[in-house]
Image (cartoon, rainbow, N blue to C red):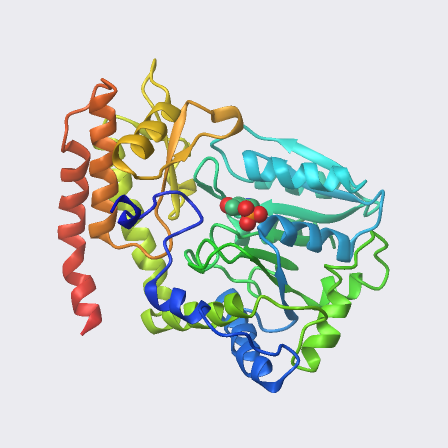
Length: 396
Ligand SMILES: *Cc1c(COP(=O)(O)O)cnc(C)c1O
């Protein structure tokens, strides 16, 4: 029965029954019009979720990491320079991927718990008078620390510097759960994965690509075959794929987007904010703090909770899994042991979140941490009670 518990990891997320059913389908000839009928709504839906007005959607059989690789290899050449701030495990891994591809990465080291440093990025771009920097890489929501960076502000900083670099954004743990504005923010490539805000199993990299990034394909010489956007777009135009697509996942994607839009994207974002705020109230009631250093950085999809001195966040995660059959996220990299993470994205309600908070408290008490059972749950309950009326009225 413990398999019935929701997960509280920041991806993969809980899969709604209707999405699971949509993925479950008989074999279908992917070169037939039946596939095109299934594929086109998924592509159109992604375009709406990303808030694109131009450019192309690319859906690859892969994961978020493959989406990063595809973004890089389709637009850049060996020896090109990219600019990136490192402030968590995911920004770190994207930098590592670029370096392994022979790109020069100008790294702005930033303390974990902070976000993309807009002033430093602007200064670096201003200093690059010869236009060496080809792209700025930004992790919208740093899943390791629960930090959301200001991408609209980043675009303004790039414009203020008068620099023409492309802007690539990792939105793997934000897209579909927090506001994302590809067109308004001037994002050249947005990367998402199927298993977070889209509530699907892992298996798809989902990208939005601007006309500027598409034009960069013509001169980019990094090797690519499986991830070549040109092959994808040629086949898409005929309603197909250059190779065998994961048909079930694509059917599920169309259904997941239908769910998000039935609820309303703004309502989905508001729900995530509300769930996150309840978690933050609980964290405060435990006498703990999020890893994100200031409230403007708080992520609405994941909270990395700094654990008390002498406690180890990984112990809580291990115990929760072994004793209660509930999954939380461990601390990664620099914050390993110092935090545990509560994922609060995807198919979740306040009632589900309360069960996660209650489980975290049981583990803390079991481990002898200095908290009072029920304190965090009560704080979240008060907040959810107070904001639930508006939710019910919105549904009428
Ligand atoms: C999960 C995640 C990734 C990695 O995605 P995979 O699908 O596991 O390859 C990349 N970036 C962020 C911000 C993530 O949360």
